[in-house]
Image (cartoon, rainbow, N blue to C red):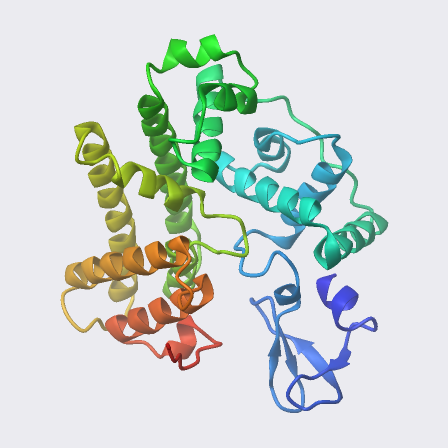
Length: 340
């Protein structure tokens, strides 16, 4: 649908950016791209949309957009999660991004409404709205995660968390004695959601290369997708490590879970012959974790020369070198980067 709405109304002919004229395109199997029959240039239909770079199915994005546009005020992420069968973390990211698009207005919201209109024309109605799942404590954790990632712990008030969670101030104090305790609970919740995402990634029946591609997407926050929350929570937690041992223990636990997941993906590729690492796979894993954390940190902080896209390209190049595979297999749009 994105291809016909944005590029080729007839389904096959579009302007090729390299040829500079109208050409016939064909769909590339197992990828969200179309190739020019004349020069082979790849065009990614979703690259011109606010969903660019997202690992979520485009159909799920459109279903979520229908729910957000049809709901007066803000819709709770757990309603989207229940209706679409998504985990909280992913639904939270999607609703946050859709809300940002609607509030900003402009061409992105016009495009969103156009896509949703075509989606409805094709017979896709509003997904069934499931009741809010989770206990009050779960809702408080999710709310604390969202508010503290947006504002930081110092600028967050208990009343802000209560309002976001739909509970009273007294309920917050019942479960948590301080904002630091609420931050730690939010940090643990975000870590558990990431761990669940990694578990599903490892269980998917795709090849080693596709597993690594998806790992690259998770390793660096996408500044176009509104998905900085976990990384911003990391910054808040790191700022308290020296004063609160509980934060140090949790940071170490989450880092270990992340490294174990990376090692599982890399080791599977070595066992099936896809990867030929430059050294012991355990050392390659540690290198990957160190480099990815550094790039993610700089991208999240907003360094002018380090966008999320640049960071992902650099991480893909490094990973390809370490695993002994051509860079084009991990990053089809690979390019040289110059920093000033």
